[in-house]
Length: 294
Image 1: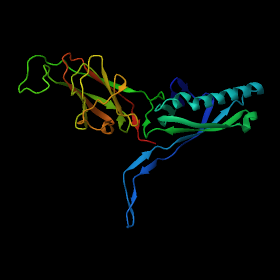
Image 2: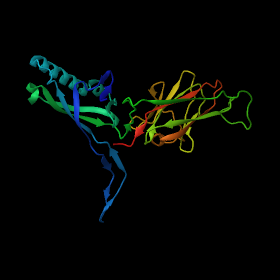
Image 3: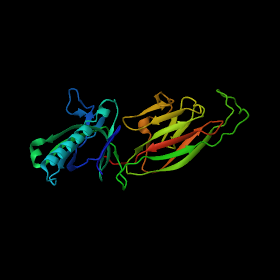
Image 4: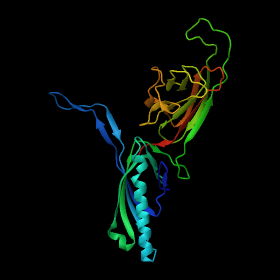
């Protein structure tokens, strides 16, 4: 089912039919440099930008015989589409994204930009129009049988730590709890790498680690109290770390780069390591299954 969703809005293309979809190919920003005093080009690193999604639309009430009612319905539906596509709530918030669902193709993130109707056929009971959706990244999210792209999730708790005594040789900082670890498999669908949002909830001492063994590891640079949650967002364009919702640098320099912290399709193992006297710390991860970009 076609839909456009963002803050406070869920528009389902009421009475609007999409008669064609064009997804433009990628464009590339390059660091190429002409070879000095020589033929050819020295290729640099390339960066891909996703193509825009362009829609051709049809809005019709020709089956409504009463002309006054027909034109009133047509005008109301056309205005409703333009209002939803204008997306004032998105435009007013830096970084905010909308979600466009295209049946059978996938869910795309970005912003609706530019929509217009050809009013020359208004008197005939129908309108044709165009609309453009600008994608924010290369990701295409997989739709389920209901036509949704649901969030997948998993939670991993830390086993109660052993308490008591001081281990020798002594190392600073001194601890009376022993580091514990837990690992569990998580299954990722789709056919492309997925990007998780990790929420680590205390209490846990500094140097806690979240990892997919043999692939990447993240070290926390501070301890967390029972009422603190560290969020690590690895999604392209939204990568960052947060403490109770506020942007804070939480990662030790030993950590992997966030753009290396993907979950691969199929079975992954998520591990949590750390020291917690209470043993109640946990990490949860949310992600959406993705498909090869269109």
